[in-house]
Image (cartoon, rainbow, N blue to C red):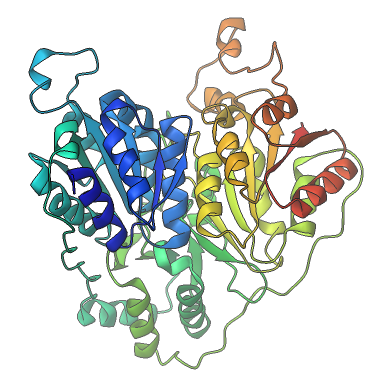
Length: 514
């Protein structure tokens, strides 16, 4: 058994049985090992940002890491933006990055680079295997590192000779650290705070916006009268009829300031204290009022669900009834396409069990209220802010949950960062319906131009925010990747096209002209 085979067998034995890959010469022994080892599914991506983004989507839905296979430093660099997003989402990931042989690195071949140096800012754990007999143990350590709560990015660098030389065999995965328990004294202190009947917000993130966490938060809110909300972006939010409905802190600073005004206390349960995504002239970075106190019930790496349960017990709220969203859909809209009519149409048709991938950015900000009473579904967002995640995230989610429909709400500008994901969806027959919002501009940046105080933009400035001239033909682009699709210009056409996408057994794209 060579080092590559020992690593693949260790990954499979450790529960890592999907590999999103874009390999090169240095990874050929790993590729060959895939044929000798049962149990590893390998999914090819045509660009590394698709590979790492798909691993993120897979982890969020499968609740375990996938591995990636990347080619030396430049291949890793191509995947870093979505590694950043995955790290912010707490998605576990095991990256395998090939390198030149240990004896070849001194010759400064064209692809030589500081792979560890590139990986460290985007990884929680980095190691280069020194020889073939260490590869399996290093792989097992990478699995343990990735599965450390709340989910971490582990990057293992594999020089080519450590892959082809003789190795010892499978290595056991070290014990996975459990989530830390919240000190009971902290919970009791939060309970005393909530009994004071002062304007208080319980801000939820992480597992707190999944069904069990939402129900405990609902009991606490019903018993105390406090407000509950979700943080602006969440890795995976469980929503729909029968679930506790929460709104999120808005992205625009002025809206967030207005929503948060008046609160004297904000209690964090798996969330971060509200801050602006960027700094703006004359506006605060901290979005809570100056006299508001921030309290932490549980961090994202702690047992948030247990902390909420214990808090409910402290408040005598275990049996408290709580409000859930009623099963109701908006009426089917008619007429022209507007942001409001799109939101209503999505709410009218969203199927039960859907996994919604939200990279609609500007277009999608109003979609939440109209899907509140849709059948139960999951809503996944970009946690790191590096655009180009939507299509890869949808790809990975579909691999993780082949029996569920994935609905990708996708802005046109960010879609061009990772268009190759459509090819992977076609090749793998993944059940993804993409709603592509074609406004031919980086619309959010037009707003940001004003927000940062850049006055009187001229033709050169506006051209940097315009992706028309020529307009992108999304139906042709999708078909070129093997994905059928159609273009719609009215809301009736959109409803029909969305319905056809939902009925299709594989990928389908609806290009929505705005």
